[in-house]
Length: 304
Figure (tube, rainbow, N blue to C red):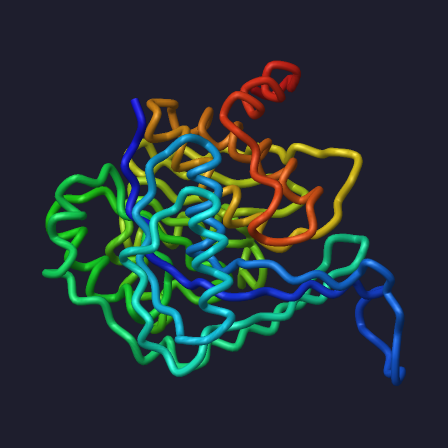
C-alpha cells in the first residue's frame, strides 16, 4: 500500500563545485572541466524526491520567490511527479546554495536562505493534510516550528533531521527535538562519543527512535522503548562522487522502509544501501534508487 507522507522543508538551486582538496589554497582561477554542476535541491526537495522514487505519495510544503530560480524548481518537481500546489511564492528571492566537494567525500556548503527564516506555516491551514498523512516529515527550518508542535500534539507520527548538533539543549533545534518521534542527526561536531550522545538525547527528549549518521562508518540507532543501540555499517560502492545529501537519503529511506513495516534495524540496513548508492551521483537530489533496486542490492549484501 502506498504511504502518504507530508514533507515540509527548504527548496533551493544548488551549485556543486569539484575542488582538489581542503583547505583550498588561493589561486585566481581554476578549470575543473565538468566539475561545476547546477541542480534543484534543498532538504525538502531531497526528501520528497527520495520518497517519491521509493514509491511513496508525497505532499510537499515550502516557500519560493517569484523569480527564474523558483520557476526552475517548480518545473523540476512537476517533472518528477511531485505536486507544487502547497508551495507559496512569498519570498523576496529563492534560496540558493554552493557546495564545494573533493574526491575524498569532504564537502563545504554555503547556503543562502534569503528571507525564508522569516516565514511561518499556520497549522490550521494544513489540518486536512495532517489528518490523512502517515507521517509528517518536518525539516528543522523556522517555518515548521508551529507545524511540528501541532502535528505531535494531534498524535501524528513526526520525524525530523537536525543535521549538525553539538549540544542536546541547542535552542534553535529544541522545538524539533522535543516534538519528533523519529530524530536523525549527523556525528559531525558531537562533543562526546556517539553512543553517549545518543543516550543523552533520549534521556532529554524520549524520542521513539534516534539515528546518528556516521558517514563511511555507517549509522547508529537507538530504539527508545528498549534502550537498545545498534550500529549498522555503511554500504560501500566503488565510486564516491559527492556526499552532499547522503544524510537526507539515509533519513528518507529509513522512513520509507519503517512505514512499510520493517523493524528499525532492518529499515536502517536498507537505508544505508540507499545512501551508499546515492553518493555515486553529483548532486544532493540525484541518484535515488527505486525500492526494487534497493531490495535487489540488499539481497547480495551480507549485513541485511
